[in-house]
Structures are given as structure tokens and as C-alpha cells.
Amino acid sequence: MDILTLKSKVKLGCTRCEKCCIYRGDIKINPLTACRISKYLNIELNEFLESYTDRLENSKLETVLKTTGELQECVLYDKKIKGCRIHAVKPMQCVMFPLVPENLKRDYFYNSNQCIFKDAKEITVNEWINGNNKLYSRNKKIYIEWIKFLEWIEPKLVNVSKEQIEEFYKILFKEYNLKKWNLKTQMLNNMWKVEKLVKEKVK
Ligand code: SF4
Ligand code: SF4
Image (cartoon, rainbow, N blue to C red; front, side, top):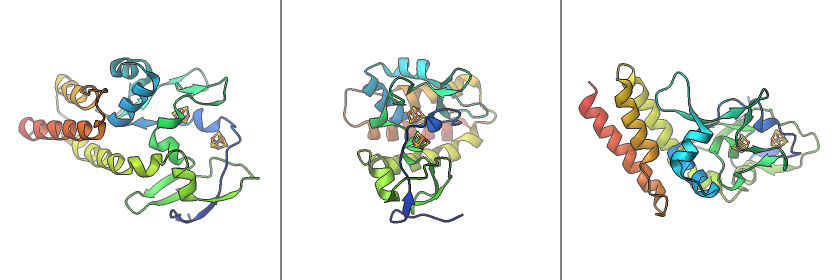
């Protein structure tokens, strides 16, 4: 498996073959992405969470985009335009696809080779993942913070009541003022609030 850096050249391009939005597996979203997609779709955060997301099985807090139909299409895939309805704010997994992070802090990736386009032009990894409004570099730090937070909290929730977990979920995913510009700060504050509660309540 070759490790790719931001400067590595890759042969990538998009023929709109649909593959990356169908049978794609779990597309995880963090609270910031949930807020941004809600704003983009011009709907309330609660409505977005209820209509477009599911809680991941075998996890207490991980949240994923719903899939629909036999082909398990992503709920945000638009068949008519053969494209993503939320391209400008899509989740990091989709921003990077078909590249997969090997070490995000160092910007190391590998190519999953799930997107086969034999006539694709050679471009740099940076061009691929930052071509869409610099979504990768703008969201990387908070994406890592969220993964680290989940790694810390999930094992602590094994014997915690359902009600308590729902309280944590509500703080993490629902307590936002979408009208304010500081969504990243709101998300970090909510994570700290839950971290404090876990330290107090969960032995
Ligand atoms: S799998 Fe590749 S070619 Fe197909 S839609 Fe996704 S990015 Fe485009
Ligand atoms: S969010 Fe968009 S790019 Fe990602 S799987 Fe869904 S439709 Fe495809």
C-alpha cells in the first residue's frame, strides 16, 4: 500500500458513475457537519437529524447518513442530477473518497481504488481533497478532535444508562444556534460540557 502525501500525484477524476454514493457503507457525520448540512438544506437541525441520519449500530454516539432503497443509496444522493445534494458541505469521508486517511495529522492517505476511471488525469492529492472550497483543510482539525473524543468517550459509556447517553447525544448534536457563525466553537464547547459530565458521573 503506497502512502500518499498532499503533493503525491494521483490519477483521479469523476465520471459520475454513482458508485461512491451507493453501497458506500456508513458515512459518518460529526455535529458540525450536521449543523452545516441543516443550514445548507435550510431546515431545522432536529429535522435533519431525524430525517437524514441514523445512530450507528454498536456505537453510543456515532451518527451516520441514512441510506434508502435496495441499493442503499445515500439519502442525500440526487438521482436526477447524478450527484450530491450537499456537495458544498459534504462530510469529510466524501471529500476524501476514494482516498482514505492513513494518518490525518500528517496528511497521509492511501488510495482505496474504489473509484476506477482509466482516463483520469493526474492531479495532486491536495487538488483532489481541497478542490471543493478547501473543505479538507478547513475541517480537518475539528474532524480529528471529534474522532479523538469518540475514542475517549465510547469505552466509558458501556455501562451507562440509555437516558444518560441520550442526554449526552442531545448536548453534542442538538444544542446549537445555527444563526451564529461560531459553530466550531459551539461544537467544542458541547464536547467539553459532555466530557465534564462524564468525568463527574461515570466512574
Ligand atoms: S466513484 Fe469516482 S467516478 Fe464514480 S461518482 Fe464517485 S468519484 Fe465519481
Ligand atoms: S453525502 Fe453526498 S457525496 Fe457523500 S455519499 Fe451522500 S450523496 Fe454521496
